[in-house]
Length: 224
Image (cartoon, rainbow, N blue to C red; front, side, top):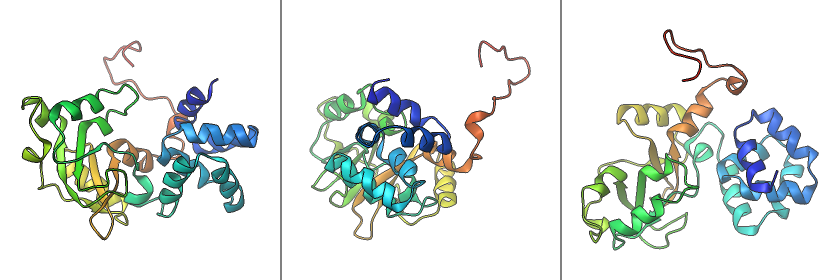
């Protein structure tokens, strides 16, 4: 498999199998595959390795990718910082609805990350400037393409701190019917976002991927 396809496959595997396959690859190939993975997934895999081995692979990764992963490894695995992705869609208040929708249309973007755009002060890469608010995908569809994001921003959604527990994040997502939440540091700078799929992966049993999903009564196997 090419690196990007292997990265996709690893992201869907149980952690022990991820580690087994990663250790079977040569160091350079393992680092290339980690580069192709989502930062939060790469951090999860490296978190299963010894500090020395993880450090060795991080040194071989592309500097920008390694920096994102290192930032995630600082946080505990059961916190918002440990569950989040550090690559949400971030734009300025002067960006337009058309610009935001163009970014959301990218085929490689996970659906949960495409549900909202985070508006901040500069810089626009995490850790960003101060978080101003969120613009949800559905709201953008109700406005003309030239509308500024700053004019339709939702500033009522409270972000979560990086040290918030996974249980707290799950409660907020469920309470407000959200698919993602912004994660901020003590200076209210956006450091990432945690999505509902990240929380589900954490809350489900470790071996959930290896179990068949029961087919509800009256549902055909083809639908499953």
